[in-house]
Image (cartoon, rainbow, N blue to C red; front, side, top):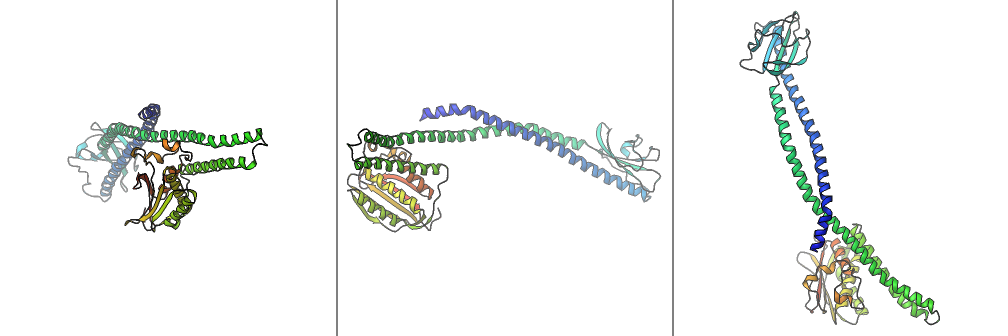
Length: 414
């Protein structure tokens, strides 16, 4: 098992690297595009806010001039990010805030125009807005707002992205590596299981097919020496065996494809168990005890559950020496429990889980003439699980093995 795991890891490692690399590249490209869009959008939004503030201030000054206010609101105090100028008709500065008094015009704009330009003022980038003064002789109000804060915020965000994106990519790579590994391992195990299933199925199918062919060839070689009944009896038995094997494999294939559909209806499990007890009594010489059968009601598929009980009964009968016992009970939580006991050799603790795997037969079962295909208990486990229950082996009071099947009762939330 360790060798298989090491071999799987070695085969899957290149795929794991490629998948992780692809995830990192795709995530990196997406983050790069998103980061550029974020920076550009943030810069545009902040610039528009600065523009709106400058326009509002310019309109306040223009309104004051239009109202012949003695002193337009040009004062900016110690603020270095706001510059205000009033231009005359000839473009000369007639009034200005104290921080640019005597300086030339910030921008050469036509009368009445409202525009936004960028011009260096005090070694910084400023956004300049022009608003024409109505009723005045071509006066224009210029308000400049510094873009230093916009540049600073944009720079900090860009720096955060430069530092953060590699960290995000590192996390993406680590998480992809961590998640892809188990997923690929599960896929490899499923593939290996499927290959093993096909191999085992081919082996199991070969036996009845070979037997049918052998009887047919003998009949063809000696057509007068063997009566039809002598030929038909073994051929019919092998055909039935082949049919059952194919049906079992088809059922398990539906389970693998998650295509198993249960036709649920309220039913009494004890009725199904009593039917199985009658079948075992008519087909075996063993003592079959049904004294422990009590009431048990569930919502389930009667046909599939009857098959579960038949497989469980046949398995117990193959391994029992003289006696079998079937029982049904309902616990306080509402779960229905079916128990199948035999007085055979039992199952070693190490094998009690493995026997539910497909085509698994213990050595003593292989040597028996009536040995099954190794699919019966796998079907038991799958069908019981589909009903929301579970199946497990343990030691039986009769000395052999006990198969305990638990199913959610009709009144439980499973």
